[in-house]
Amino acid sequence: MATMEEMVKAVQAHAEAHYDEDGWDEIVEAWDARDIGEYLGRMEIDHVDDAVEEMHALAKLRKERGDEIRATAW
Image 1 (cartoon, rainbow, N blue to C red):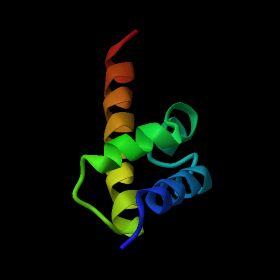
Image 2 (cartoon, rainbow, N blue to C red):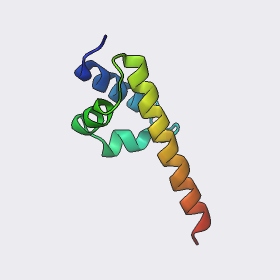
Image 3 (cartoon, helix red, strand yellow):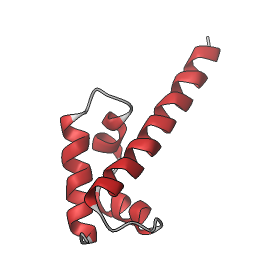
Image 4 (cartoon, one colour):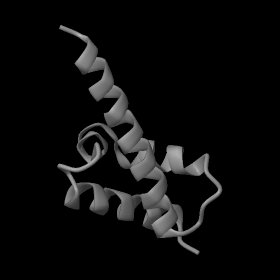
């Protein structure tokens, strides 16, 4: 089991390492430790890998949604 602080730090490190992939740039630029902790706190997870996976799913979804919006605007 990981603490929330460990999970948040793992998410932040992963986001920085994968900045140019799947929307992780938004996590780096717009989410602070408190935001990440609050989001993860709503999930029933207690492992670092699960925390990174949850945030990846969110980042990827938000990026795809943004891409769809930009594709339809001109």
